[in-house]
Every structure is written in C-alpha cells, then in structure tokens.
Length: 552
Image (cartoon, rainbow, N blue to C red; front, side, top):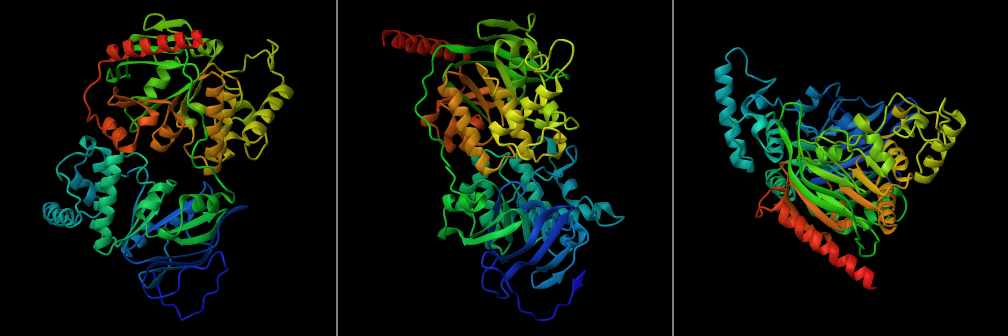
C-alpha cells in the first residue's frame, strides 16, 4: 500500500544519524520499532541506503538484523516507524507488496523446487494465466535477456537438483530480477559457496550495481564486507550504532562496534607440535540408507597436539565422516583406530564406548543431534554422560549434582542466561552452541571431533571458542575440526584436508594454505591423491617426528 507522506524533519541520536538526506536513496527506514514480548528486537532503527550501491548490514546474533530485513520484506510489521522505498512511503503487510514495490530477497536457504527446471522455478507463482505455453515462452525470452545483461547465464531447462550451489543461487537472483526487483536483499549469500563461486557472485554484484540495482548484504564475514560493499551499517542490541563508508573503516573497527569491545580477529597460537597419532583412518567408506556412497576411500591420521581441519562445501561427506568416527553411523568398509582401539564394519565401537575411551563429539547440527530442545539446560548438559558416577549413584540421578554440573559448564563457557532450569529451546543459537561445546570440551577428551563450532555464534564468542580449541591442542589433545568457514580452518588448523564429493581432494599445511588453493581443492580441480601413498608419507613423517622427540 502506498501512503502519501507530508514533508517532515527527522531527528536522530548521534549513533543513529544516517547520511545526509537527499532524494538519492533506495531505502529509508525511520524509527523502526519492533517488540516480541519483552524482547526489543528493533529500537528506533534508522537506515538510509543509496541507490545503486552495495550496502552491508553487520551485527552479532540477536542484534536485530534479520528482524529489520523481515520488516522491510513484509514478513513482519513494525510496531512503529516508516518505510520509504525508491521515494515512496509504504506499509507492507506481506512479501507480495514488498515485491511489487521492487524489493527482492535471496534467502540463506534457497526457496527452489528441486525437481522443477530453472524456468519453472522462476515463473512459479506468476505463470501468466491459462495460456501456460505463452507464459513460458515470454519468460524464456525475458530470462535470456536478464542472463545476458547481468552475466547470470544458466541452462533454463536444467532441473535444480543437477545444478551446483552457485548456479542455484543465480536462479534465486534471476527470480527476483524477473519479478522486477530494483533492490536485492541477500542473507549470508556466501555461506555455502566455494571461494571461486564467491568471486563469481561478487562479479555478478558488480554487474547488477552497474545497471542501477541496489544490493543489501547481510553477513558476518567482515572480510567480504570490506571487499565488496560501498557502505556498511552496524547493529547492536536492537539499535543501529554506526554507519560507515567502507573505505573509511576497517575489520577491527567494525568488530569492535558490533561487540562493544576490542576483538582479536586472528587466533593467537604457537606452531603445532604434532606427536604420535591418536586417530587413524584407512580407506573409510560410508553409504547412506539408499545405498549411495557418501564417503569414499578416505585415509588420514590425527596426531596428539594438533588441529586437523576438514574443509569443503557443505554436503560433501563431512557429516558422514564425523558420524562414522563417533560411532553413530556404520562404515561400509575400511578401518578406524582410536586411541589404540580398532573398529571396522564387522567390529564397530558404540558411541558410549568411544566416549569411555576419551573421544568427544560436537555435532554439526545442534538441534538434530546436539541437544533435545524440550529438555532443560541441565538435562542437555549431561546428554551422553548421564551414567557418570559423579552424578549417578547407579540407581538415580542426583538433581543437585546435575544442576551443579550445568552451572559449572555455563560459567566456564559464559552461557547466558546462566539458568540450568531454562528450557534448551529458549536459549539463543549461540548460547545453545556454547552449552554443547562446554559439555564435550570440559570432559577433557583425548580426541575431540568438532563440527561447525562457531555456526550461529557471536563474533566475541568465536574468539573465545577458537582459543579453547588451541588450548586443548597445546595440552596434547587431538582435534578434528570440520568447518565451511575457510578463515576459521586456516586460522585454527595446523594441517588441512579437503573433502569433495566424499573423497579427499587435497591436503596442505595450514601455513601454506590460501583461499584460492583451498577453493581449487574444494572444486576438485587439482590432481587426484593416492590415499595409501599419502598414509605412508604421513606415517614416515610421524616416525621422524617421534624420533626427533626421543633424541631431544
């Protein structure tokens, strides 16, 4: 709905003051206010986004970014405030009105029908009436034009399930442009892309910008903010606390504005001291319930006193690797040796037994495997360890000891609120993650398997978690780190292996790694690796290191 608005003066606090007001804005948000019960998600938020620019929005989890974008796209209605789009004032009650106003949104999780073609996905919901063939022909012509104009070429007759993640994202952008979007909102657009796909996406951003499209980019990756945006706005605790021209700021300043204190962006660590292997994996293969091979002939060693990073785009076998190593899913073939104990397809070790041996596992998906959301925090804090004699007499659990255990974990990892009785579902995603990390890491395991440790975690907590991982390494523990964040992999790891389509496509020392090289490995663009030869090389290196330690 378009609303005629009278001329008015606008007053801002110093930390909310946007750029000088002109008619050259694609988006103007004035005093946007939104509450969810006692939570003040947006507190008089003001924002101006220049036409034809790329504008970044950054902030910690819970800062109010998603709420603000949901209001702009019509998912939520603001309790108060004003929205201006391309010079017109609007009140959006649903996303259709936002689309009609020229706003398109590309969600973090794509909204595509996998067994439909690209063309069918794009026109879904706007087929063109009863004459479908006519609508398809017109859409094909328009999409060909858009693909040529913006460098977004994709096979219109390909089904979505045959396309790479990067091409699926192109389809989402094409959908928005086809519906007339002049403003694109992208939520964490590079989370599942290789570095090469990210470069290609940024090229597309440049082409869109040249054609006058305004882009709003929501991301926690400050390096990307610095490389692609023209302006950036920072949110903290529901308020807009700063606006900056990107070229006039830095990652360090943005991190400090987000958290409210100085943040160490690089992990402070000494060189690793890899010792005898605590985990040996030889020709490991895993198939899913349909018989599809998800992990193929994987071999590596994990040594005491090192962090071994596992990089790769999500869905390339990382989950299956963690679950096989922790005894959750059976292996099809191959062998695993953990702390001197061997297991294979015919002689598996249960998760309970592996925990007893000194192996801990932080799963990638905290909701599916990390905790039970209907349980209290104190109950979630002992999942897998409920038979511990410290809290279990053999007959029943001691409620007092269970709560004390949870309280200690919360204090150690700064879980907020520090309430053992609070339902697990009522914690933020970041605090749920910290509770799981505390549960597994405070057990002082010899081998830690950790998947996506900082997913959904605030930048300040990321600093803390990384340091705890390094502390474990320095204490002689072995850590297997699975992450889609290449900055995290390169910063925390000592050595890196890369998975592509269930196979190891590359191995490299972290000191020698860079995004481009890892991206090539993630795309399987390097020469194939003989896993047995690599294992022999690793064994020889390990023996040499042990010999040097003995001599010393």
